[in-house]
Length: 326
Image 1: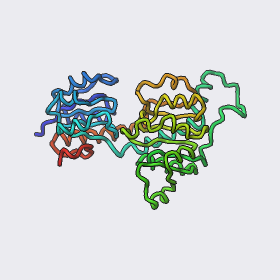
Image 2 (image 1 turned 90 degrees about the vertical axis):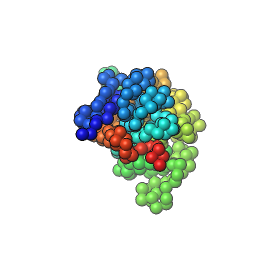
Image 3 (image 1 turned 45 degrees about the horizontal axis):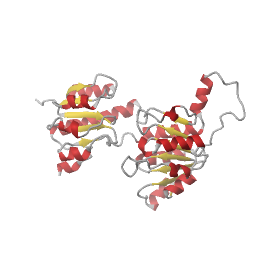
C-alpha cells in the first residue's frame, strides 16, 4: 500500500484540486483566506514531505531550513521569484512551477485592460454610478481607437504571441522588442516588426509588457522609457509589478506624459502607490491574469502532479532546478 505524502498547502485552491489533494495526500492547510506570515509557514512546514505554495508566499532560507527533509516546493504559479531557488538547489530540494496553462487567459486579461484603458470603460462606469450622467454628448469620455492602432509588445514569449493573435483580430499593427529577436521567418508568420525598445515605445499607441521578473527587468520601464512614449499612448502590465517603476508611472499619468494605464500587477502588492487609487486614467485589477475556474484548476492539477512526483522520489515534470537530478 502506497503511503500518502504529507503536504502543506498555504491557501485553498479550486474545489477539484482540493478533492485531488484529499484523495492522494495527508493534507494540512491554511484554513483562512489570507496570506500566511513567514513564521506560520515555517511552523507548518517542519513535519511535511511537500510544500504547495503560492506566488505571494516568500520561501527563503529560513523556511527551507525549517525542514531538512522537505522533498519539494511546488509553486502554484508560472513565476517563481518568490522562492530562493539557489538555496533550494543547494539543499537538493526540487522547485516546480505551472507553465503553459496561463497563456491564453493572461492574454485575454491584457487585452481586456488594453480596451478598458483605451476606451475609458472603468472611468465611464464610475461616472454613471455616481448618477452624474445627464445623457449622451459628443465630447464625453473620448478614448482611443483600438482597431488599426499600433500595439507594442515588450517581450514576445507565449503570452506576447497570444497578444499578437488578438491584435490581428483588430487589424492592429504589431511591433515588438524581445531580448532575443525572432527569426525573419517567424516574424513574417506572425506579422510583427522588430524594433529597439526605444523604437517600440515611441511608435506604439498601446504598450503591453510580457517579460519575466529578473534583475535585468526590474524597473525596465522607468521615467526615461515613459517619456519616450506618445502622450496619447497607454501602457498595460500583466507581467510582474516591479517591471514598472510605479512612482515614475504615477508621475507620467499625472503630467500627461502618457494618457492611461491598465494594471493587473503592482510593485508592492497588495499595496499600490497612493495616487493610483485616485487617478481616473488608470484601470486597476487585483492580479486577475489567471483568474478563471478552468485555468486556476489546471494550475492546481500541475502543481499537485509536481508535488506527488517529487514526494515519490521521481523527477517532477515542471522542475525549475533540474540540476539537482544530474
